[in-house]
Length: 333
Length: 110
Image (cartoon, rainbow over all chains, first blue to last red; front, side, top):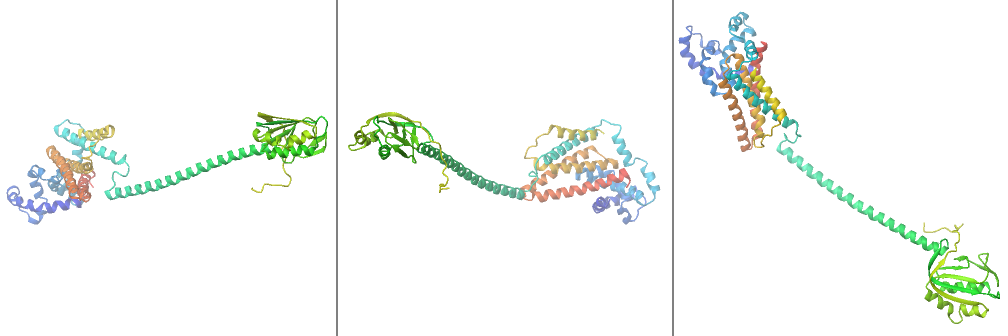
């Protein structure tokens, strides 16, 4: 009450008073004290008929209403408020606000006023719905102030930068890992190659390649085992990589024993003819054997028949079991 | 009654059709809606007072909307859009409250 009454009162008195003076004498015989008139009871109603029409354009609908309203309101409100209820009864006779509301609501009348109001309310509802929807279905950004938006943008920029940095870091890490895994694969490959080479040397796998075949026929049993060892040494000096005598693989710890005609290699008896299968560079091996005063001449001096033949494919397929050394350990691990 | 139906139809259409508001008008829509609400409350109060005039209502409705949008527009041009729209909303809010008080007195007699 106070909110709408207070603006009314100050607004009212000034314009109201001037017309009040002329109307006072005309319409109302009793010239009540000016103070009372200003209070509203007499003046208000006097103005009402003229006000709504003229004041309508002046302000919003309700601005103009409060003014006329002040009249009836003044009469009505005191009544329910505190002053005699008897006053209200006669005044309410025409129609109370509640009755007007019910009248307006229930029998639906298709009048021009109702239609125009309906149209405007429809527009209002449309705007209301659109606004509600647009504020609710969008993120908080829509209603944000400019400074907030700038701040949010800054934050996003910073975040993007941070994430970019992180991405770069992770990518470099990935390339590192990839290269290191490449290195590991390379190392594995090299290890495998080395293992093959070592296996050939250790005699645990068969080997093939170019080389020579040396056959020593010792029909008289005159070839000592040290002569065979000399042959092996000569071959090794000439770059032999894999050697087999009959069906015994010659490796690092191979030893010769026994006497002429009864030769044992690695404790295994070997009978003549001794057939050497040697893998190496044939052009090196054959001359190494045939040099004057070399292996071939020495053996022939012992009455043995020696033949050397080159071959592009020598297969050394005698194997030795892999032995794990009991004491020696690799010092590289 | 028809008026209430109009309001409901408007809300339903707005929710169902989801019309797209041109971006140029978008900033003025909320303030215009508040202004229209003010006019509607004024009209309701006038009806309860028995002095309702549809011509006045139409004029006040439209002028309220236009003036409110105009104020916000001017405020935007002057660089005080946010403050001015806050001021408009405060003023309209006060008027809505006073009108609601009058309506309440009519309807509930209290």
